Amino acid sequence: MRVGRLSDVPRSVLIIEDDPRIRRILQMTLQREGLDAVEADSGETGLERLAERDFDVILLDLMLPGKDGFEVCREIRRTSNVPIIMVTARGDSHDVVAGLEAGADDYVSKPFVAKELSARIRALARRTRAPQPRVRIEVGDLEIAPQDGTVTRAGEPVNLTRTEFKLLCELATEPGRVLSREELLERVWGYDYFGDSRLVDVHVRRLRKKVEEDPGHPTVVTTVRGMGYRVPG
Image (cartoon, rainbow, N blue to C red; front, side, top):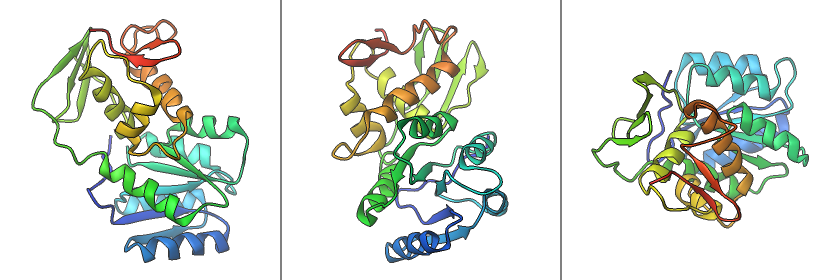
């Protein structure tokens, strides 16, 4: 899997948006923040841009002509773990969840606030700053190497996105302790005042599909009703 080049300070953003007015607003907003903003007016063009070079973050509209945002997101996730922020005009909770299930890391709704968008992009970078301990963590048949960014299950590699990996590490480094959704939002996404607990729940479901023998009856990442999630100690 291709690894997205996410640095402490993001430098390049790919904007996949078919509305030229919104695309221009996004580009100007990001350029004012000192970012290299590259435009794509369709999902197909966006995939071509991504094949040509690496980006730190992708802003992906859900409602695209041809390949929609869900399909584009799934296609990107087959080869890359570059952070993806969905940009959607829809208020339907189902669409937000579906986009996250497709592999997005975060979302922002139209009309968006420029400062919030910039904060979300920078939060994706900040969460990787802290040096990871040079230790290996074992949880059942999982072996997690935080410093190397790798996970194996029964000796076989497990492909996780950056967000899924960060989520697993936060839980696994404190086995037995329940981490609330609010705490996980702060630790993994880097914010809480405009966070959405659905981000945590959807990413836990995605993570379970990859690390659990039976995702319907999880033993690695368990739910503590009314409190949050934990990895058994």
